[in-house]
Length: 188
Length: 188
DNA sequence: AGCTATCTATCTACTGATAGGTAGACATAT
DNA sequence: ATATGTCTACCTATCAGTAGATAGATAGCT
Image (cartoon, rainbow over all chains, first blue to last red; front, side, top):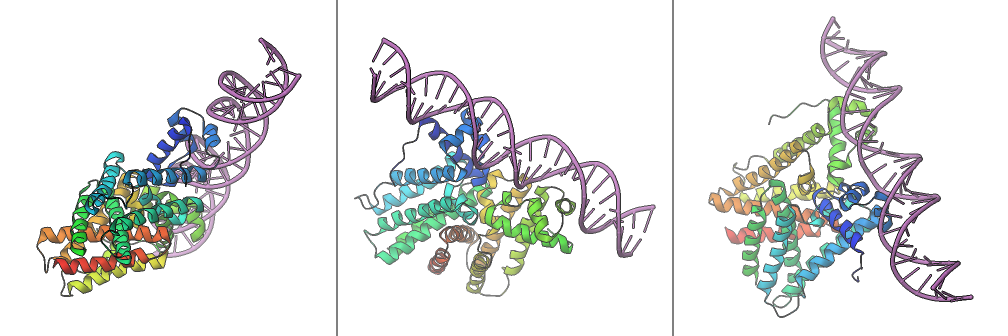
């Protein structure tokens, strides 16, 4: 679970790999393309990440850790509303910055086709996101209900991202955020 | 828009291609694999579908037409509830049968990476699904509200599918369907 | 004769991966 | 101080495998 300490070059490779994987999935990256993008040879990428599976795993793990760090502690004294707002803005930012879907919306869809280790990291991402959201609800809600609401929120956001990317506008994401906020308010 | 009439062999190729694309996306199919699966040589697959783009386009178009045909006329005299129930069951069936995500949940995520023609078909799928659902709501709801609700429902279902596949259980889909049904009832 | 559906054979381009080499930084031991 | 060993971060060169695509031949049907 601890943050790995990557060398500057390795980090650069992970950056490029993440960008590409978010647009086209695990197969959208190749050692040669990554190497060219960061100015080395493909063998050097293998030096940092022996096999492609290692690279994929590292990209997803780093992504998960970064998102969770940005969200902060779900049990701290911020209001539930402000936590949810932050959650929504993380999704919106991901879409607008990268012009691409959440890394795990992409990889989640192709989970049946991924190397086992990579798929496990993806699953971990989703359970972490649902867990965070569920914990945020615990201030005001019973555990079972919190968990169901959390799962629904993460699902909806992921789906809205896919629709937004596929249709080329972020209207779906905004619409879903509005309706989710309404729904949550009604349920509390 | 008209149903194309594919030869038996072409249909067989489309079947296999769809199954694979639903698990791993557009790049998960290869002419050689498809050929082997249906018992011909790769050159023969090129005979039916000259380029890979043609094949992808055909798979998505056929998928869309099949789903819409299964849903029927959204403006007929069935109740709204029965139409939504049918919509939900179509998603559940897709997940349980194929052990894979909706074709367009997969392709939608990688839309930025697809050949233009294929991406256009995917977009058409989503707008058709939202359109169908929106039309179903028109019996009881104003157009603007109907459209927003419809978009949210399709988004949520797509996202729940992704989570279900990624976590290996259909709990997310069931949960989302329950909460959506609740939400819709509250909104009417 | 012409059409459909298939074949064989081949092309170029790219994939992940490995073997083996090199230049420089750093630490230790003599 | 200097020689020795080890580590990092790259390199060149190469491999077998697979990708999509094409040319040209063949057999059967209408």
